[in-house]
Structure formats: C-alpha cells, structure tokens
Length: 310
Image: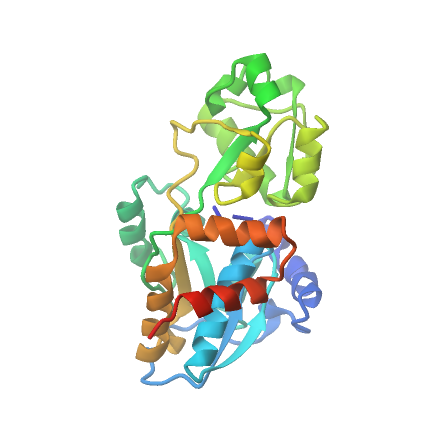
C-alpha cells in the first residue's frame, strides 16, 4: 500500500525490534539461511506468513494464512514485522515464506527507475526484477494506492488540486506520517524529485494511522499519506492530490512467495483468494479494523466464510 520505516542502512538493527514487537522472538535477518533460488515443491506441509505494520497487510496475511490452514497446511504467522525494508529482508533470508504485497511498490523497491505506470505493465515487469528465490502469484483486481492527502480547508485555502500545487507553499507546511513517508520515492523524496516540493518540517507519526489522522485534522500537520482503501479519506472529507508524475504506481494486491514454498496446492489456494478480493470489499474490511476495532483475524475469518474457495 506502496501501504506502510527504516532506510536500508538501518535494516539490520531495526529488524530485531520489529520481530520482537510481533512476537516472532528472533531476528529475521540473522537466521543464517541464504536466499538461494530453490525450486517449486510438489507439496508444502508448513509455511510462515508475514505482514507489514499496517492493518490491511495484517488482514490479507490472515486471509492467506486461514485459507492455507483450511487446506491442511501448517501455518506460522509473523505479523506486523515492520516496513517494506524489513520484511523484504526477512523473506529473502527465509525467516518468512509468504506475504501480501502490492505490485507497484514491489516493482520500485527492486527497480527504483522503473518506468511502467499501467497496472498490467507493472505486474508483468515484476518477474524480471525479483531476486532469485522469490515469485509473485496472480494479481488481484483489488488495489490500494498510496495517496497524498490534505484537508478540504487546506485544499481550498491554497487552491490545491495536484501535488505540484504544493510547491509555492510547502516551505510553510509540516508534513507527517510513517517514517518511510519521509524517505521513499512514493513519499517526500519523490515529491521533491518530481515536483520540487519541500516541507518546512517532517513529523514522524504512524503509517496511515490514527496519529497521522488526528494531526492532520487538528492542523498540527498539513500533508500526509493515506491509502485509498482507508475510510479515513471519505469519512473526513479529505482531498487526494492528483499525481500526474506518477510517484505512485498502480498497487494491485499480490502474494509474494518463496519459490521453495510455491507448491501447486499453495499457489491455487492463494490465487483463488486473489480472484475473490475486490477494492470495495477490502475498503469495507479495513474500516471494520480501523474504525470498528475488530481484529484482523476475525474479519479474515468472516470474509472466508462468505467467500468459499472450493
């Protein structure tokens, strides 16, 4: 959800705390396993599912995990690992085997100068950039885009319609959000590179979370990044700024899996999930978690009961 950090040089130090917070009990970056290519097995008895540090990723990971458990696969969950820089390291060192990802965010993570900006082109480019040992399964019609948002009052005050409209006034503004928002091309780095937008100050808050929402609504910050499946945007009449320079790429949901765990049964089960996910349905489920305070595992269980895969 190019949804949801630490810079590369901080990965090794950060991962210890990230997995401790989610109950993993070990550092995924010091497992001693290499990320070798491997080959797809005929059968998988067990699999470790991970997720990023935001509600939608945890929800999708729960759906994947419960769907696989229903097929007789033993599942270990390591959810809420952290930001992309941390969980990508974990899947490459075999600390996890599977996680929900997003097509555009994955593409630019491994190829920062990617030029594809159409959904199908982005998806088709992924096999060419993924490290040996990693694959993606089917992309879902469900998509969750990154979005630069402001309040309607701020948009009206400065006549803001696109990200570029921020340039004349951004040096008087405070931006805020998850730490990754400051460093990523889909965040402040891209806004500076592509639009010449630089802010007076950045306040580290949470990635698309309640702290960022509160700060935006009380004008402690004027700009943040949310995800388009979040009800925060519609419920609070927030304005999404247009992105003609495409710092945000299409972000269809896609499972990222280690080749050595991509058995036919695992792949077919996850692809069946992918086919049934919709953007509208994902939006409703995220609202149940963010606003209704339901647990991700309960919402996932409910979705699977209403969307049988067989």
